[in-house]
Image (cartoon, rainbow, N blue to C red; front, side, top):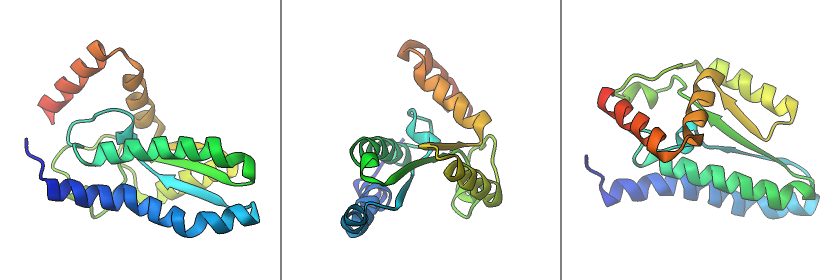
Length: 157
């Protein structure tokens, strides 16, 4: 198990700071117009400390928190706030994963699920449901249970 500070900085800069740079650029205009929507793409990996997500997971957890704060503070100002929490979506990046990715879906299915979530006006758009619901459920368990499950998962991945 090894994490470099340089890798951590790069992941935080990309996954978290990148969203703040975007907010800085667009929020003033959206607030003055009192219209528009913000979609924050986090991940089911942000629900709980999943194995193989040492850098990725914490940045996605921060984005979940940020989306919740934005909803609380801005939804009443005419802005739609959406939190997108995908499971595994087939891409060039997921192709590099050296572990089994349960419920892997295509980008087309992910896009369909995102559009359906927007149409419903859902705050959280999570998919595929069989995976994201399972991860969410484990995150709600007491630590003495959830951490044991995560240790078992880490040994098999």
